[in-house]
Every structure is written in structure tokens, then in C-alpha cells.
Length: 487
Image (cartoon, rainbow, N blue to C red):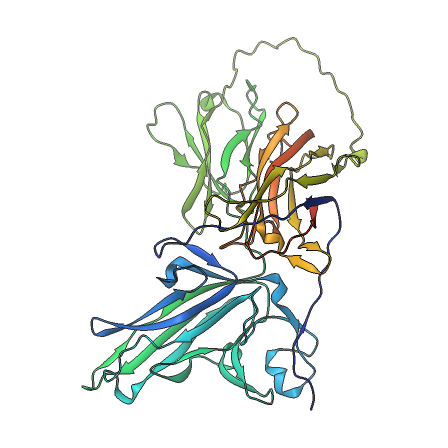
């Protein structure tokens, strides 16, 4: 018989800082049913069908916390971790997943403790209420960067397709009351997906009931960094202009983002409100100074999703000097060769190992804990154009001989230890250890950044480290590698 196992893809990372410690551990407390969560490992009834007050309802039964809780699908994001990557086998019956040898991301039908294990469930439906003792479960729509397939396998490894997005939707299956089932969930590309499910049934009195469309969010790969709050300012305004001189105002974002839709506004003497400048929708606004524009005020706004204002600058005031008398002045120029500029991230080679204290049990006795500090990281930027930079870190698994513990159990609280005047360096967000949820530093996490236009110079970054591990972690001296990336 030909093997039908999907082969996991291997990954590798470089070495920069080694983390060494005795036995250590990580946990977050049980989540409440009202909070928004990211589920990335453990058992979950993703499509959990309920009958409440004469209607069908879809919920998420989260079994990754104890005690387990029911959640609203709107409050849950399901993460398919990067290590879910597999290769499509060279077998015709699996061609629906994509070309043989291509990469897809698989949440398997049988549980892998390191991945999410989603299923569907009708065990909470009462008996004798629904005609035929079954509900119709439909995948109504899929949006995302790749195809989505949900299938089971029979005893000889043949796929039994339940839902498939690339051959037309909706797809529907009949699910008997009292069913608890799992399947293989396969995503064809990294990125964000929205899956829309619906459950329908007929009551014993003939009345038809439905949940209506319910959306579920899946993220394949690392979670995106939270969108930072953007500050907007205007640069380039001179103290005064002669009539006929060119005025160039430039909108500057701090920190820089991918948003690029602007609108400029002006308010001149005699006007009570700012009005939009027609046709000016880029970061730079140039015009000719005239006596009529003296004491006019200008501001700029940044937009996303059409008319949603993300940020607004403080207004600046134009001064047009119409006295006519020339101002005695000299122009002094100097040139610095920018071809030698570079962005360099370094760690003292004699101070690159973090040895955490031997772990101790938490006061609740439910985890091992240890804390320490990252060795200083030096970032020097001499590049022309001052494009700004960010430095992120990602942690490998901890290993001790043959024992292995996920890097997600380490978190940090970044800090800026030193920076040049006006460099504008900010520390990255706090990343909690991923004991109960989240992926800790196993996902790429920001250590620090400098905005465009203000990042030139040398800065030193650090972080407080927090490591928490399950109590079942075996004794030993564990080592992991933190890889730093600068962009």
C-alpha cells in the first residue's frame, strides 16, 4: 500500500543570542467566555451547534482552558501555526489540495498537541426536537489568500471530502444529533481567512430554523503585528517665505505605516473652518507663496478604508514676508558621503548568553517560573534618507538532550536602554508567555523600532524575560536560540 501521510516541512533559523536556564515554565489563567482570544493549540469544537429559545445557535466550545467555556465566534481567532506546514503528496486522490510537493497548512484529524484540533459538535442538541435527528451544516463562503478543504480519511487513507472552497460553495453535510467529529482542515496559503458556516434544521412540528451565516476567523502563519497608533506631523515649513518662493509641506507618520492616502486642508484669515485643498492627496503638498497666503494655516489628515481618519496633524502657520527688503545672508553647504551608510545590529560577543535562574514553582503550584534580562542589543543606522528601522526577535524551541519544549513559553517586556538625541526609538509591545494561549516569542515579536525621518544614530535595546513552563516539563538544562532580524 502506498503511504498517504502528509510530510511536514522542516524549518531552520540562524543564531544570535543563546538562552540557557534550569527547569522553567509558563501559564496564563483560565480565559473568560467574554474576552477575545486567539486559539492556536489544543482541542476546540469550532462549530458547536446549540438549540436555544426555539432557534439554532453556533458557538465555539473552547476546551483549551480548564474549566472549558463557550465563546461567541466573533470573539475567537483560530491560528494555524507555521509548523502546520506539510507537502502535498504525489498521489492523484490528494490532487484537490494542490500540486504535488507544494506547501499547504494542515490541522490534522488526529490530535497533534502542538497544533489546534478543531471539530464540529451536535452533542448539546436535545433529542426529540429536530425532525430526522439531524442538522445540515454548510460552509457558505470562504475569503482568503488560498483554497480551503476539510476532509476525513477512511481506514485505508482515502480522502472523504466534507467541504471544499475551490469547486463552488455552499457545501453542506448532514450531521446527526449527538455527533462529535474531527477532520483535516487544510489551507492553501499563509494569511487571513474568513470561513462562513450555517446550520439548518426542521423541527418536529415542521418549522424550519437556521443559525444564518456565522463567520469564523482563521490566521495561517504568524499573527500580524497590531496596527500601531500613527502620529502625523508636518515637516518642511520654513520660518518665513518671500513672495514667489515654493512652499513644500510633507506629512510624516510616526511610526511609519503602509497607509498612503492623505488630504490637505487650509484656513486663511477671515475663514472659521478648515477646507480641503482640491486634488492634494499625497504626502507632499507644494505651492507658491503669495502675500494673500500670509498667516494661512495648514493641516493634513491620513485615511484608511475610504473616509476613516487615522490621524490628523497639528496645524502649521505660513509666514509670507512682503517687506521687500533683502535679508543679509550667506549659504553654507557641506556634503557627507551617504554611500557608506548601513543598518547594523550587534551583540557583544562576550556577553551574548542569558542564563536564567533555576525555575521555581509558582505560588499556585501550577507552573515553573524564571525571570531574567536580555543582553543589550545595539542598533546603529547611518543610511541616507533615514528610512527608519525595526528589530524583531523569534525564539526556537528549548532543548535538553532529546527533550524539547516550545519557544512560545518565553515572553518579554522590551525597553529602550539608550538612544541618540532625536532618534525617536520606541520599545516593542510586551509579549506574554504563551502557556495558556498565544505563541510567545515563538512568533516574530518587535523588540524596538525607529520611525522614518528620525532613526539615524545608535540605540541600545533590552528586555525583561519571563519564562513559564508546564509542571510536567522534565528536569534538565534547556537551551534555545533567539534570532534577531533588522529591517
